[in-house]
Structure formats: C-alpha cells, structure tokens
Image (cartoon, rainbow, N blue to C red; front, side):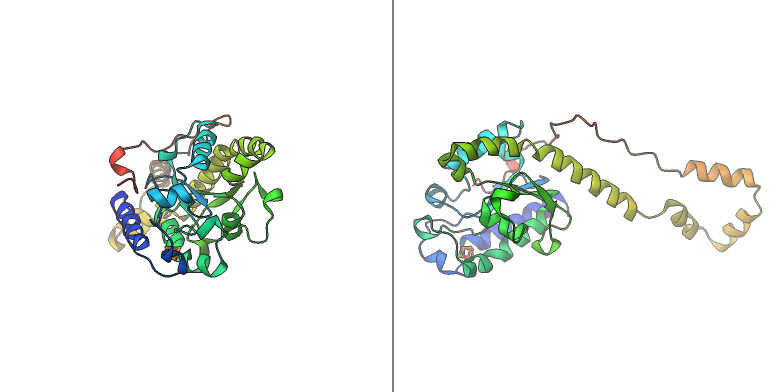
Length: 269
Ligand code: SF4
C-alpha cells in the first residue's frame, strides 16, 4: 500500500467511526475517537477506550494519562506523532466503566482495518483490555514488558505485540509507574528485532534472480547460452549475485523513525 493509499484508508475508517452507531456507546459519546498518528509508522499503541478528555476533544490519550504516555515515549527518545495511537473501543464507556464484550466485538472491525492499513511491525498494548485482544489469556502482571507474535487475524499481518500497563494505572500506583519506565525501554529493541525478521522474510519471498533471468531468456538465447564456455556462466552468476544486507548495529537503542511531516498527521483536524 502506498503512503497515499494508507492515508486514505485511515481517513475513511475515521470518517465511519465518527458517525458509527453499531453499539450502545454511541448514545452517550460527545465525540468518537478514531485514533491519530503517523500513517507510515511501524508502531501502533492500542489503549482501552476514550476517557472524559478524549471524548470531549475526539483525540486519544490527551488527559493526564496521555501526558504520562508522552513522558514514557520521551524516555526512549520517541514522540507521539511518530507512532499511531488508538483504542479497542472508539467511544467512551459511561463513567469510565470497562467496555463490555459486545461493545468490543462491535468495534473490533475498525481496529482490524486500521492495523491492516498500517501494517505495523510492533503493536504496543496499554492495559489489560487491549492486551486481551492480542495476548489472549495472559495476565497483565505477568505479561507486561514481554513480547509475542501477533495473530494475523487481528489485522496486523506480520507483527509482534509488546504489553505495557495502562498509563492511568501508572498514575495511581508509583510501583506501576516505575515498571512502565522499565518496560518501555524494551520497545526499541523489540521493534528492531521484528523489523529485522520482516526484512529476512521479505528477502526469502523475493523472486530468485537466477530463476527470473532464466525465465526471461528465449529458447534461442537459451540454446546459445548452452554453447557458451563455463567461464561465461561464472561471470554471469557473479553479476547477478545480490549484495549482503547490513546487520543492524547491536547497540542501537534509538530506532530511527519516519520523518514527520505535519501535514501527514491524521486525526488532528
Ligand atoms: S464504540 Fe465502536 S462500535 Fe460502538 S458506536 Fe463507537 S465506533 Fe461504533
């Protein structure tokens, strides 16, 4: 998918979310909160659902929990506009109650389509409801700071998932806040590891250059090739050899993110 196609897909999903009436949460919302961020990012943060401030402004993580998320990101030299941030349910549950299973199920197609469009290498879950979608059966007290492969049925075709506590829980409990800073430090290496894995998988799926060249040769050319001396064949094989891929620096903790163009920010209009 090109940048323009990805941006258009995300905007189309956001437009549907803003007028959605699939579940009862539409009755009490002020604004739906589709999500926002960089359309070319490799990292998607998924929270539970909008709170009071998010409902008022139509943006994810803009209250005190959002401020802490920004600080956590800053601790690894990342900014929120370098990633994409969304929620499992896009409308605020009344009185900040937990989203109900039928509400999560009704909203699930939007998150799946966002992940299909973004094709992230890493999904970061914030809190147990989000973690439950990507690490079924896991307990947040055990799973925080750990990484697993994402089920492609979630929409993330080839991604790993990394679990964090919800920033709101970190605001309530200093020990969870300390753990959150320790956990988020593991995100850049997790991204780099999955990025390298995806690169290797891409190379494995790339067409064999020797086979592609052989297929492009006409029968007459193939007959002529068979008459060429062995030295010519060696020279040919040398010319089409693919260059080695540079291994990532082992101590690179700061993962380079896509350059940010303010016009490319979604959800800020
Ligand atoms: S929570 Fe999701 S499914 Fe329910 S009304 Fe909002 S956008 Fe629609």
